[in-house]
Amino acid sequence: MGGEIDNVCNQRSNVVRYLGFLAIPTSPVVEEKPCTPTPCGPNSQCREVGNSPVCSCIPGYLGVPPECRPECVSNSECPPTQACTNFKCRDPCPGTCGQNADCRVINHNPMCGCPAGSTGDPLTNCIKPIPIPNPVVEEATLRPLPPNPCSSHPCGPNALCSVVNGQAECGCVANMIGTAPNCRPECIVSSDCPSNSACINQKCVDPCPGSCTSNADCRVVNHSPVCSCIQGFQGDGFRDCRPTPVVVEPSVVQPEPRPCDAHPCGTNAECRQQGQAVSCVCPADYVGDPYSACRPECVLNDDCPRDQSCVRNKCVNPCDGTCGINAECRVSNHVPVCTCLTGHTGDPYGACRPIPVIPIPTSPVVEERPCTPTPCGPNSQCREVGNSPVCSCIAGYLGVPPECRPECVSNSECPPAQACINLKCRDPCPGTCGQNAECRVVNHNPLCGCPAGSTGDPLTNCVKPSKTDHGLTM
Image (tube, rainbow, N blue to C red; front, side, top):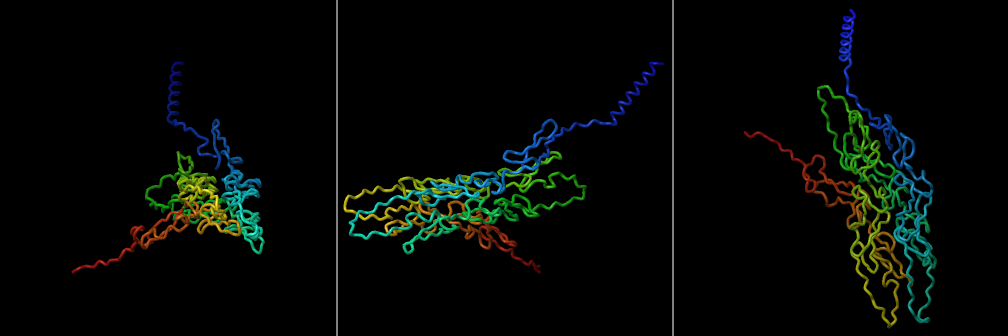
């Protein structure tokens, strides 16, 4: 009797195990990753500790996730002796002033000036005046010249001094603001301008014109243009916006939407999906926070260090291939400045030649002329006023002698809607496109296209299609 009961119990136990196996199927264990997707928010990083996410701000950012922020956004968040550059409080002086110039920071702005006993443009070069010896003449032959009130340089940097009725009158040079002796450019770096403007050629201007491609909108964020495609278009707002393809909904049941279909990423960012987890990354050669906006390495010169320029959205050395033979190049506030080597003269942007050695004649005594040889440097002209040389740049060149330079050397020194042609900022469109074609400038480059309703090659000719009536011949 007892053996039968045990057999029945064993059979019931086997049945229960069998039924339980059928009722509760085993499923594969999915390993959960607490940092995918990240719960930490923008500008943060996530580390897995055990089975929990640990959030912290990325290096260079302050605060506590999800409220990580840069050190600064505007100058007012920095001490008065520093400026906000690339979201960091930094000394704005390095690389701002010219050679041999002094720099001091006043209310976040770098102020350049030549040291005592020097003269010139503090934004390019300060030099010590070369004393010109007076010719040996008999005391009774010439009347002594009246003292020149401008010889002590009372007007300060970036100013011109003229003698009127024996008195020195000062005025700021062209494109400078203020009152002598405090003449200065409108801006030196973009932080000197309102947040919706950028400093281009020492002027506060809108950086948007010519920065974006067609069918894109532009907005200025902290002095830099941010381009995004308009509604109905997709792509890179800086390079190419294409019409969004029209998806014809099939009659079958729609598949389950993917997390990337909701466009959770920022402007110009790429959405990557793994299962139901989403991560946003910036495309190659782009920087920024992919959850808000990605942008190229640079759009304006101010996006680069002061010893580099923005060329094709890359920060590069602007000196390469800029200067002529026997010339040397240095970068002053993103702009390449060429000068002839010691012992050479000429056009440093073309070619410098050795200065010929002229023997000093022993007799007769020749009256020395202050402009021979010229002390003004290349691309300048010298006028004799009394017994002193007065230097000025020749027509078409900017700066203050001896640092006279052309309006531009590379496209990055021009507004985005112009290009550097023959050392001048000009519209590159005239003469570029074909007949009946339209031309627009995007980031210094002319783009040709046929108008709406026309066809053909925009580089040669655009034509409107002719309407031909087709009749029946009996």
